[in-house]
Image (cartoon, rainbow, N blue to C red; front, side, top):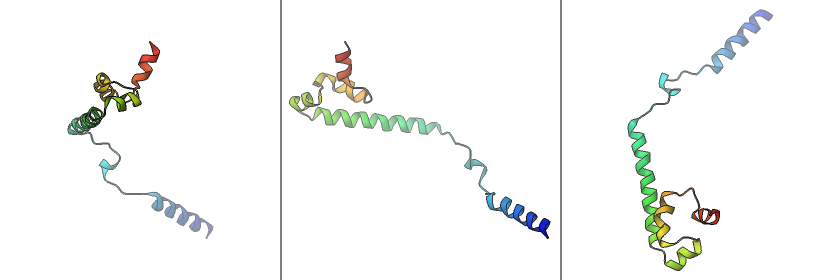
Length: 89
């Protein structure tokens, strides 16, 4: 009786953890279109930021630490702070 109990437990453990999924569920599918889509989304973000910064007045731009000539740079390099470049030099 003890052996049968261990067998039932082993079977229920195996059946309880097994999941049936399609073969593609573990595989990451690559789409060349995806690369272009993400590039397009990044371009839209830069364009939107550039438009918002262009609508600010010179004093508002000065408040955030950039000039009108730096708008394109700031929009293209959103991860960097233009003030850190000026203070490093």
